[in-house]
Length: 211
Image (cartoon, rainbow, N blue to C red; front, side, top):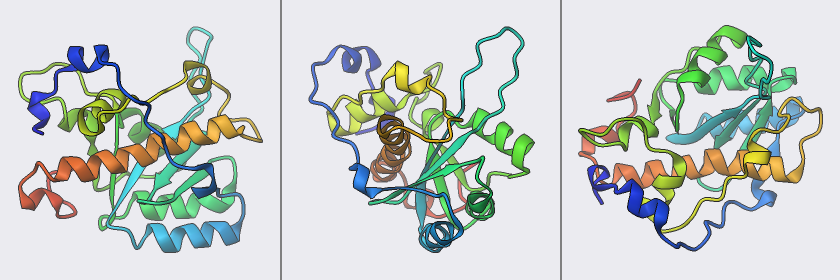
């Protein structure tokens, strides 16, 4: 299906089966050097990854965000969650996110780019913002993951506002938080794979047509 043909209103109104998401058993929290080394080995060998981040919400007027507090990177069958308060994972994040050989795909990555640069000196490279790519010519705004899942998979991506606005800086994440965060990154990679099928061959080569 062509991205330009996305009918947002129809997809939002449709009764669709739930998107199952990735199993919690396939999600790894990067909390120590050994886990970070394992993550680096797999992530740096990938051709593409799903990418997202989460930040503790701000409520007071004028309060600046201290995020991202969690960064998620997904392969086709696994997801790694990197709490940015833990030093063990930061060198891996920098290596992967700055790699020009590994493509990172996600939705609405403008804030991720600026926050990672400001807080950790990480300069994102070889990134595809699917929200921009999927909106099609003549459309305003961006396409979100919910619409993309409905479009490509005919399923409904359930995103809890309560979980999305929870404390991502907490020292211990709940299972609900881990599932939510993991799915954000994993579904981005799945949609990226589907989107590539609609593109000219050149678009699949790392470094081309990305920001």
